Amino acid sequence: MDQITHDVRTAQWAEIVHKCHERPENQTAKAWLNENGIDVKQYYYWQRRLRILAAETTNKSLLKTRSSEEVTFVEMPSLNELPAERTEEIVSSSGPAALIRVGKIEIELHNGISDELLGKILKVAAYAC
Image (tube, rainbow, N blue to C red):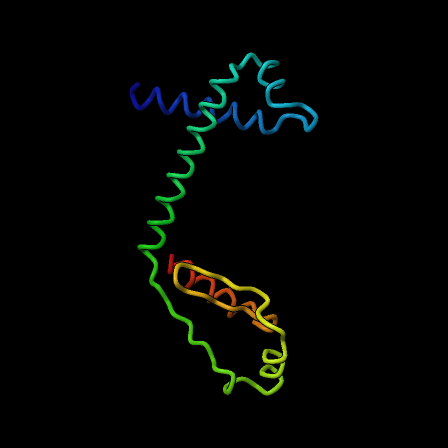
């Protein structure tokens, strides 16, 4: 199959898969496929191919983004550098509100964390994968 034929078929099946996903809530996929004269096996074959294609495209996009962006690091203040009320808030909590593990890195997050700091931590953690 040449590239143009492949691209046309992929586009046609992407439209069919999209329409099937947009079917009425109370209608099954099989019923919608039968109603529209679409072979069930072909539908699921193409749905699987489209998902694989989407995953490959996403992975390539992520790799390009990661390689073109500069990795930054966030300096974390120690408890001694924080205002007294913030230190008490963090220390008095019974443990982390969340724990993020990325490879060998563990990040404990407490309820008192600012949105800005959380954003920076998550951005840096994404590069650790």
